[in-house]
Image (cartoon, rainbow, N blue to C red; front, side, top):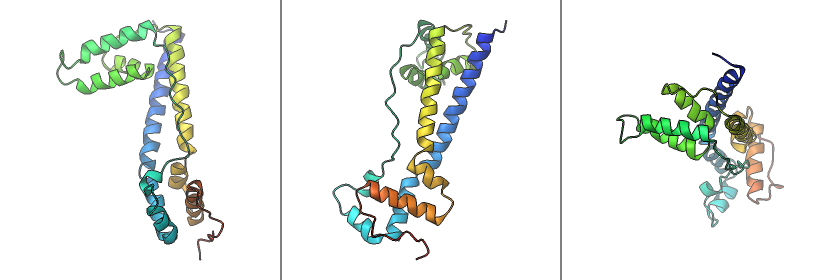
Amino acid sequence: MVSVKSIEVKKLIYKSSYLDLEYEEIEYKCKDVFEEIWIYIKDKYPDIFEAISNAAQPVNEMATDLSENPPEEKTYLPKDIKKLYHKIINKTHPDKVEGKEEEFRRATDAYKSNDVSKLLSMCNKLEIEFGDISEDALDVLRKNIESLEIKLDNLYNSTAWAWFSAKTEKDKESIALHVLQSKGIDISGLHKDPQK
């Protein structure tokens, strides 16, 4: 029988899965952005690029983003979720079942990171009944979603995403100057007119 709680759980699982995919997509789009920014800086400001390249810290190591994700808070994993994890492991352990190594690894990673949504999704995929989950498990699931939303927000507010989304040469120059300034470079003498 379908209950309001079971519908809420499904909605939270889908929401978490969607946010995971969105994060994966944006992260992929931003993957090589800093290399592009440094190529832009090298072309636009070769003297500054050379000075940075000759500095003690290599350019590729300097390409840190301005949006750091906060450390994940370790939360208590409720007993009902631990039991589900053990059911998943019984169906995916490489010593017991061939060809399920990837599922086993994902379940173990989800368990270690307290990702209730991934564990519940795996239960659905592996046809493991989980019935009503506890309020504690729901709270952990909500915290998983909040954490994902914060990570996504940080990514959308990152230098990498700003560069990826830049529409004009002026936007790109502004971002490049911001990166240089964040590295301690005095940008006051640099022109900001991309036409020059």
